[in-house]
Image (tube, rainbow, N blue to C red):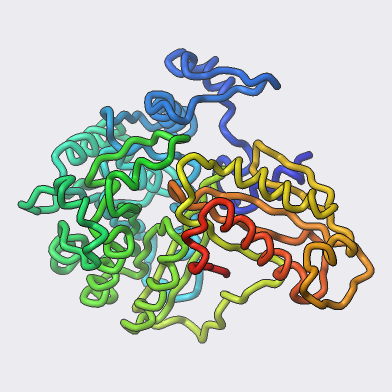
Length: 448
């Protein structure tokens, strides 16, 4: 049972506190009476919370930070409420980058690692986690008075780490309005508050910067997901041109700052943006680019990191496409369809063609066993070489942002298949799902 859980949660960083021990809502409710009203039990007796209730998600974050990290924390209504396991993944990935030998280690002696959090928000989550978990020092920046006030308050309420964190105001006289954001789809160049240039002071140097950028181009887009409520203000959620414009500005700033940072990093919400951002990084002449995937529950994000520091040794790209793991995205899914509808449609597709399916609604995956005769039924118009053994694989559905799902298929450990067989089946499945859930996106296939 333990091994099965580890496989399902394999994309969570192994050093993440919640990798093998996810939060137990029942235990937390018994220890923290303020959390108890938000916990209910399923028919199977499992403790749950309503993820659509902002008060429930905020209280969960508060008790997790207190219980697991000894951090006292709070945010006012409407501010972005972070999920602790997901944010911890990002911290540990940066830890991996800093400890690797990809670029030379410029640290001398036992100097404290210095981080720079772009848009720290009222929650100030990255500085709080980085300081408490790893003893890192941080500068956290923001532009709104509410974010700055509550970030300062969250730092001061934790004297054990407060000396490690500075909150810095970004000077910006223009006020972002919803009217500006409604024109976001027409604007591709960032024109918001300063990000790095004009905020980093002369002579300052850092080991890394990190950022949870505004993922959306309009406030309407940010509210499409009816299944979650993490809050979030206009400044936190929305940027004209979306995350691509925001991260592109970070790249442009990094060109001027060069080796003032050992590593520049950002989270990315849309996989389709990752390709163009990497192309931009190659264009400006960075020495190293690294990417990763952050998976927590049914949410999938990506991380991108780059450096201008010359690498320690010649790097052989680790981005090699695996024939045993395939993905595609479904974008523009209509509001009346959820990830579970897509999961059921996948099950129906294979079951109709004679395959054996085992659906796990809790982890949003389906284990599929396809006999060779079933493969021939699915691929009627394609000739392929028979293989003696049946095909066994898993398909998992991840939510990226509202209206966008990532579908990932992977062979079971130890399984092999005829070259191209799994990808051919996956292409058939993709066509079926696009026709059913996002017909207008048929021309925008995004395979990896």
